[in-house]
Amino acid sequence: MPRVALLIEYSGRLFHGSQFQVGVRTVQEELEKGLTVLCRRPMKVIFSGRTDAGVHAKGQVAHFDIDEFDGDFYKFLWALNGILPDDLSAYEGAIVGNKFHARYSATERIYVYRILNRQQRSPILAANHYLVRQPLDVEAMISAAQCLLGTHDFTSFRASNGDETSPLCSVQRVQLLRLGEGQLEFWIGANHFVYNMVRIIVGTLVEIGLGKRAPESLSEALSGRDRNLSGATAPAQGLTLQVVRYPESLRLFEKSTERFQSEPRLQK
Image (cartoon, rainbow, N blue to C red):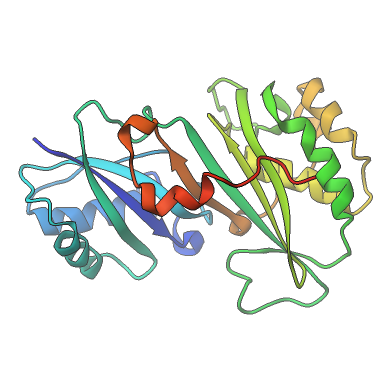
């Protein structure tokens, strides 16, 4: 039975997260419904990782098993996207081995958090940016973020919701980019993330940028392993799951992710 991996993107605005939940609209439910119609049998998908309500994805990966497949992904994706709702799309596919697992085969996940730092709101950017009206000290935020690189216990940046996964995360990439006109992007890549980790980090960095806390407070929170030492949780709409990486031997979705290979690990 062939195993297929899909590269999918979605706007999280009207989804209650990626994973199936009874009584609410989720990405998994919509994708499985579309595949069930197309394949004419009940389908089950596995995601590379969970995204919460309101969080977007550009490079989410899902896999599923199919009875037979002729390898024509142009035709398959065209038909599938004709069934899926407008806020969800599959834009690349690959046949993978039966040992491939969208979640457990992944080696790195990269998230981007987008901030709009200006006084007035933007109707165009509101859906995927966090509006911060007061001026931010971006240099202080960049300086503070350097301590995140490496392997650390991120208990201070985990929401208190019963998350029982290991708090140890190896962060390989941290960037805070200034794109002009008040647009900022915070990039972070790690082998593993705990619940709400990126949003709490960003909330803490914003407080540093606003002068509400010192830059060294981020490092102190990291070593203190106490949620009370970190800042507020930034809004969900600013967060996007941008890239999921797999071992080079798989060469999975190379064309769609190759532009991220050469980006610097840290902007100073």
